[in-house]
Length: 290
Image (tube, rainbow, N blue to C red; front, top):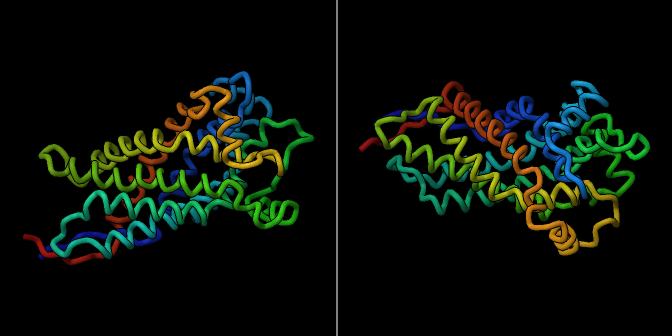
């Protein structure tokens, strides 16, 4: 018999919120690049514009919404995935098959995307406010104020604008991050070169972040544009796809570099924090060792 540490259902939300505190400026720049139309401004130039107009704190516009998003979206998707994985895990201690892991991750991600959509919408708007003329800014004071303003001025259902794309992106993101992380970590730890340590966690999460970015970028661009649009500006998902396609195939991958630059450290930090929470605060489970 042996003992292993198992993650609690809420560890993923806490780990993701911690990672968001570090990577938020990169997320802000990614959103601004995705909402560009016409001539593209580089990530470096956008950074200069934000710093010139808003100062260093301009890079943290929308941080309250970003944290609220992680505490809803990531808590739900990690929680569903972890609980389901632990419930369905074989009693001999072997991991569940990858197809089942991917399915659970997709379901968890879809549910998390729905739960986190209101905070995600406010997050996108607060981050994009920086580059708008003063008379066009929404000027949400914080995430709760943003949720209130949207509900009162545009209707409660507006909080779920772009939800179909948010849920689709979240499902792909969670498959790319969680199921591929577990797969890569499992493969690495079967070799004599890797153990259950930080170097393995960093390597696994970096590769999972690259997979997740590639899988989700087209949906992420569409989601960002749908959330940032004024009421009535977009007639439907098809018109949004066609409008983006008219800018060329690469329009679906706008902001790919900052998306990866942001998602890679975010994924690494999330899983490093998650693993440390598991190792130090997870509950003990006795399993049979053959």
